[in-house]
Amino acid sequence: MKKLIILAAVTLFSLTSVGQSNPEDLINTFFKEYAKSPGKAVEDIYATNPWTIRIKDGIETMKNEVNKYTVDYVGKYYGYELITKKQFSESFILYSYMIKYDRQPMRFIFKLYKPNDKWTLFSFKIDSDLDDEIEQAAKLYYLNLDKEK
Image 1 (cartoon, rainbow, N blue to C red):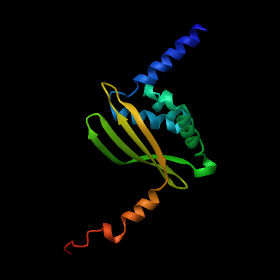
Image 2 (cartoon, one colour):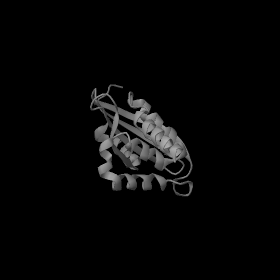
Image 3 (spheres, rainbow, N blue to C red):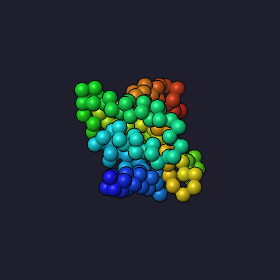
Image 4 (cartoon, one colour):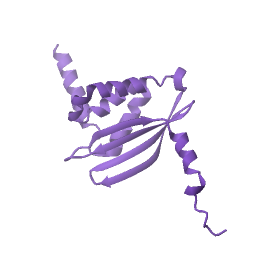
């Protein structure tokens, strides 16, 4: 019993302290765990924010979503690439990543917030509309046709 309590305390400490001094560390920790256990990675990054206790159902939904990305469903997982990083202020940053699977790319959007001295997850979104967006970006009205040749 004593070992179980110590293990629980160490686990809770590691969840709240890993990577919070640097937003990139928080993301890197997420993706390291995601490669092994997607649901646990989602659970761990949400655990960086004490307010997420109010949205347990939403977290379970996200865990179930990433756990659906099996080899049979989307193919092998090959890693991730940064699409963009937008910094609103010193304390609020958005990271958008392309997640690479055999069948198709996915996008994970992380919004991180530092209310005081530690970075926490503010929001996490998943979408699969990258192909629509790249097609939209290639339309003529987005191109600069006034370039000199």
